[in-house]
Image (cartoon, rainbow, N blue to C red; front, side, top):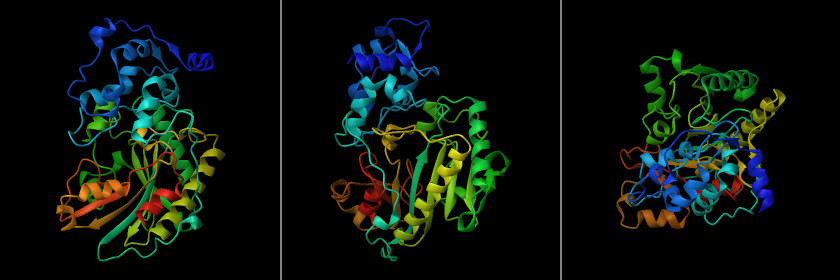
Length: 360
């Protein structure tokens, strides 16, 4: 225990904000349905509000998105975000139980595993094209040395963009592509990319807005993609990087192979420029939202299920298969024409191959 306290002290800045008492400042979470609200007590808040990470991340910054967005009566949201790599250590009394609850009992002593060898995926190359319209695999990566999007400065965000442009420009062959800055796009060009499911949506998501991730939009945000638009990298949305492999049809094997190859090359290119990705043996790849820790991987298919989706046990069936559904346009969107985005629910404690296998 003393080692933990010493470790926290090393990663903690002295906080001197002038505020009222913890009782006066404690948020009203009585109507909330999210993991943060489930575990944050007034006593815990009193203790954690005296801390800050070396970059100045506070407990109020961590929980604000969950305070502002109580959640859905039937859907348990996470309700907190990290502002930097140290957040998960400095505020571990809250984040450890949140992570354990969200990731199926993943304990503070557990170690994450990684497997980016696409040869270990069995099958996945023949999903029924009558139902599966497209397949994609995505993950996030955070660049060590910079704050995460909820807390980063304009300068940090621009530095991440500059570094990304330089690194991605070195990709070759089928991965060769170009970077497109959001600020240089017309509204029509942006909307077309969004409608085609290539680009992240405009900052309307409550998660982005309440956590501060949409500050200075669209400054230093953009999309890089290869010539075929089958390999994409989003820059400075919810995470520093979102790496996506996608294509029409149901050949998840091909999508995953491209994903593993491209992601491995990108990590090497960033390391060559003196910047590794945030990673540790317990949490795996460190990302903004605790739901994405570990692999950060979401393997998804756009699948047409006009009849099955009306079945009373549709949600239960997905839950038993460790799958989750989103609308046609992703999180916080509706299903159009019975088309759902079905993907793995698990990220942490599983290798990259395992969640892709669940969907395949």
